Length: 467
Image 1: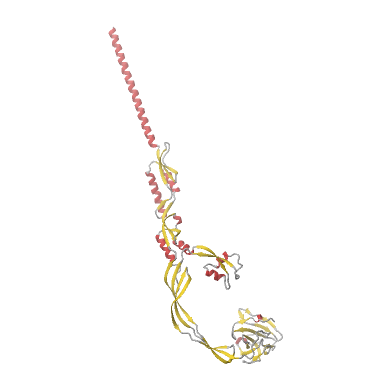
Image 2 (image 1 turned 120 degrees about the horizontal axis):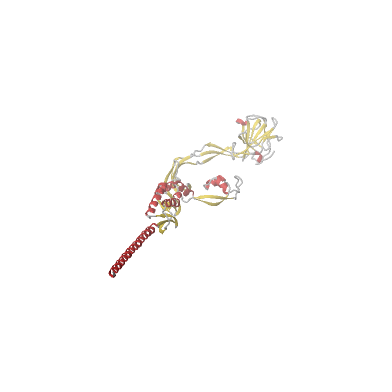
């Protein structure tokens, strides 16, 4: 009985031992499984939370899972810009990236692409045009620079048939240097050439002198009359007074173009005048016996111009084509029996009535004054002198001309002439009578005062006296 008890006890102890081993094994399995699962989850969580943050000038624009993706996006945008501008481009902004831990974030390549497309700006390879070492404007390439130089150089080439170009050069050098430019800043060759030739505005003061006009001042300073008026709002119309100061806004070119030209012209050679004494003419009277003939010669000048304005002129050669022929003039030597006093009296006895003054009328110039009076009223010599013409003179009708030593007086449309050529007359002497001969519309005398000859320049008789 005791042995049996002992065996059962042993069996019970063995069963308890086996049960404890199984439980331990199960617990160990559970713990190991949990650890494996947690490790696996931790691995995937850690590796899925790291991204590449993209930055533009330090500002984040989005996340990418792979940094190679950023290069693909940059290549895409660069190609778009190349197609748009037609030339290789350089990104202006600084693009960078950094690996960041964002466990709850997701990558956004489309957002990065869009943000970069809207943010980035580009520059292109260009050339900065310089003039005299001074930066001016950017152009696309060397061909544009060559075109600018050609346009500036050819700006003042001669166009006349008698002018040939010897050489042309620029006082300031046009050059270019490599430059990165925004595409919108590139200028076409025409614009750059115009700026080089026009340059900047320089203000000067001009002192008005005798004989000046707005047109001449503007022309001499290469500006328009309108620009001259705008710079001087104080001016009243076109009136200039000697001593006035005018403001001139004068263009100052950035490049000065020098042309050396050969100009061939045919010039007249003046003739000499030979005087022959003639005692049949009164002293002071002259008469052309043989007209002079101008000679001619071909002259070649070397003309230097700066920006189209002549700076110097020198004769290179001169060839005579024809010699001049002297003019022969008879000069009177006879003493004038009655020389005028230089003052005049009214030429109509009783005064008459002034009907037409000196100057323009009816579309033509009236070279004297008309004095109306009854038919036959005496006409008086306005001053002492010698009668040098009596007779019919076209539209003047019956006419008398008296030489007074300096002046000539004419009395026209007479009904009678009462003197003869060569006769000396005194001031106030009756020389004819008023009529209506020639081109006339009523009884009157047409009275003239001239200098230099019977048909010399006319003077206003009313400047010598008043009725």
